[in-house]
Amino acid sequence: MEQKSEWRSHGGRQQVWTHASSATGTDMTFSIFLPEGEGPFPLITYLSGLTCTHANVTEKGEFREAAARLGLAILAPDTSPRGSDVADDPAYDLGQGAGFYVDATEAPWAPHFRMWSYITEELPALAAAHFPLDMARQGITGHSMGGHGALTMALRHPGRYRAVSAFAPIVAPSQVPWGEKALAAYLGPDKTLWAAHDAVALIDAGARLPDLLVDVGDADSFLQPQLKPELLRAACDTAGIPLTLNLRPGYDHSYYFISSFMTSHLEWHAARLG
Image (cartoon, rainbow, N blue to C red):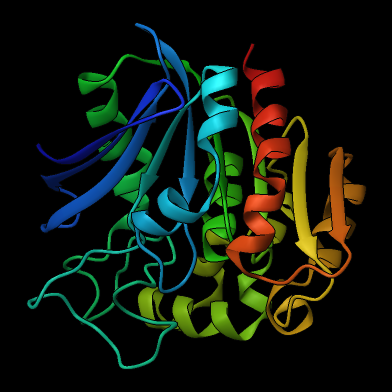
């Protein structure tokens, strides 16, 4: 690993690191905030959305005051592998910056686009080995495409993430244009394979969470074509999963929205991580 930067903030340390990833076969970058003290600290992983890197939430998420006060470490990975030898697409919603948190099986994506393995296996092991983290107290959250990743990873790893939340998540990618495009490209046309990366489908198939917090802006231009939180509400109601779904008046899809409710999400996680 190579440390790229470190800043003092709210008594803690905000760092950015790069490392050679065995999962993606590329160099990967992530940021981590460590509160003041020796630890070990509970860990919240934040997954970003389309077009983003680790830097979006690090620079605009406004999480450090709350994380420092609550004693939480915040880990923010990139959204895809990157590099001149990594497949890409001219569209913003496919390729570099749009990994969709799956392990691709289709050409030309399969060699590097293995974000599921990177986030669920390689990165947590790396973080646990290098930072003072309590991996028995983990939470996960994310925005949009990252909200999709957070929900599906939590549903498929029962017990690992003791707190789960999301900002404007893509809850049913099999049923919306963003997801249909990405899952078809990365996993192929067989929709039965998509279900493992669809939160609503996973819940319908029996996956469960103790509870769940979701915030969405009612002025989000992607609310109906891409996000469809009512599908998550129906699935959770049927499954008996306690869902706190906040439709925030006047808020859109931006980091102005995310930063406005970041503290309430971190407080939700802290209450469940102990």
